[in-house]
Length: 268
Image 1 (cartoon, rainbow, N blue to C red):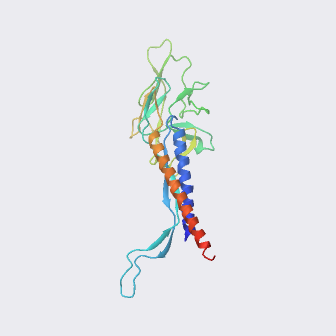
Image 2: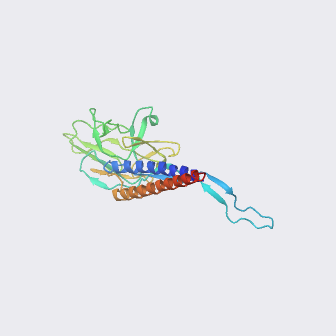
Image 3: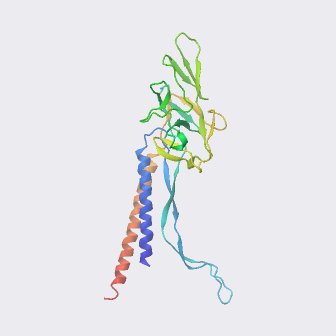
């Protein structure tokens, strides 16, 4: 019946609208440090079974195919692409890039993720107490907390996360902290909460914290940032494909409407 076509096309329009929202968010964050692009995954809905495959007739022959009519589509979920973003050289002491797998751990409100969240953004700065914090509107502190002495004349951060400073009157660098990286078995299962942050979920698995460069974790590069991994060309192509799919579903609604109109006029 044409009403099934109307319903199926309507689900298509709703799903494509969600995909367009995801694409728009990707393009909006094309310059967001450490941002990971998302994609919308689709799945078909239930089917009306009008004839089952394999049904046997009176002489033992079996129906080779069934007759099933689908009821449309829905967005099954959004999936992040955790491929490495392009390196951006800044030469700033507190800019860090993770080369490989891992997240920085930062402190958040206790009501969010149990008080900790994770990020790929390495644009750090210092707060009023000299602590390393994310250079965003909230100033989330790195965990474990690392404080830089206010008289430090030079700061170096090694590839394995050792933070060292040189102070007046000294000739050797002194250790002031160790940056840790956290990995997850399924990073796609992390929950995005904004501010370039993710929090742990049952789907992500437990956090696996350790020293950069060990157990398959990435290493740190000082003076660089990881750019967004959004590919504008790909996203624009996907936007065009989504728009064309939207138009085809709209045409399906028009065709179903015309069919219902013709059926309604049969009595005249």
